[in-house]
Amino acid sequence: MIQFPPIPVEHCVSSRLAEVDFNQLEFGKYMSDHMLVCHYSGKEWKTPAIVPYGPITMQPTALALHYGQSVFEGMKAFKLADGRASIFRIRKHWDRLQRTLARMCMPPVPFDLFEEGLKQLIALDRNWIPSAEGSSLYIRPLVFATEDRFGVKVSDEYMFIIMTGPVPPFYPRPLRVKVEDTYSRACKGGTGAAKCAGNYGGAFYATQLAREQGFDQVLWTDLSPELHIEESGTMNVFFVIGDKVVTPPLSETILEGVTRDSVLTLCGKLGIEVEQRPIPAMELLRAHRDGTLREAFGTGTAAVTAPICAIGVREATIELPDYSEDAVCKRLFRAMSDIQRGKAPDTEGWLTTV
Image (tube, rainbow, N blue to C red; front, side, top):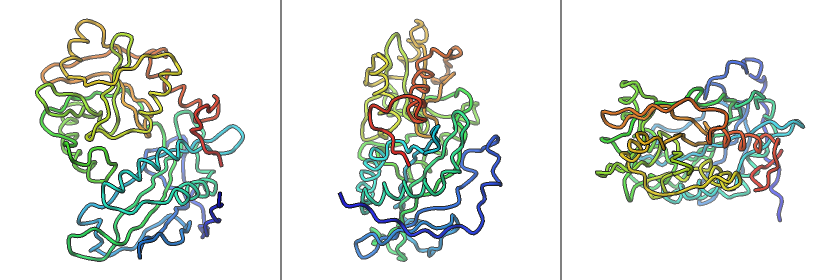
């Protein structure tokens, strides 16, 4: 195997690390000292560089600003007891990025550029990784069109950036969610299975309306008469009904979450039975009435597992009891966190240490 060469580094003049109160982190507020930048033109990716985090320059006619060729990933790195850092599931995130790039007519990012860029950047800024339980270094790989052209076209030029920042737990308390029966996150044949920027902007309005009604997020549905559940806000969603964990099957309208895949693997290891099947919203009401709906939780990179305490289904609201430490979502969170932080064996090869 050919070793990827060291990436040129321009060190920041003065670190901003001392400005961060790691006991009072806010999600997305702080950015680490450096970022990786790589340009694409002439049908090839150029030599990457690691530079101080800061503004970038592009023209107002950059195609990403007009026609939506912008995609990203969300990843995490954790601090190990021996001082090294662990990056969680690099290959799985790269796989999803490639699928998204293909769907958006954008050039693939070579795996060695993606992997080595991550490793060298995280190694450089390892002191930015917080130590507190539930906190981590969030990693945001981003690719967007930069060609200076006003016409509607697929761009011939792109920028690839990796930036990082320390974050606390994304959802510090259980969520109240509303089953969405008017607006759709994605449609068949659309970009629902891709992690592109437009999917998020298009979801804001319904989420804003739900928050005005006292909810934190929406449960997206397929808007069929049965209102089959698809996702929970920006997360995949799971329910514990009886003795089984039930989750919607993947489809062209559901993003294939890396955390979702990890949770399914851990369920197998913990002896928890899983069903992947359509879940009508009214089934949740029936299961609540007969006492078999025990838990509901979202899964995603930012939150890992996020318990849901209430579900609004049209005029009705399901109130779920408090979650004990023996709850399935809490057990899954601990099992994954222990692997990510090196407290449990990484039998699946999920971690890359630097």
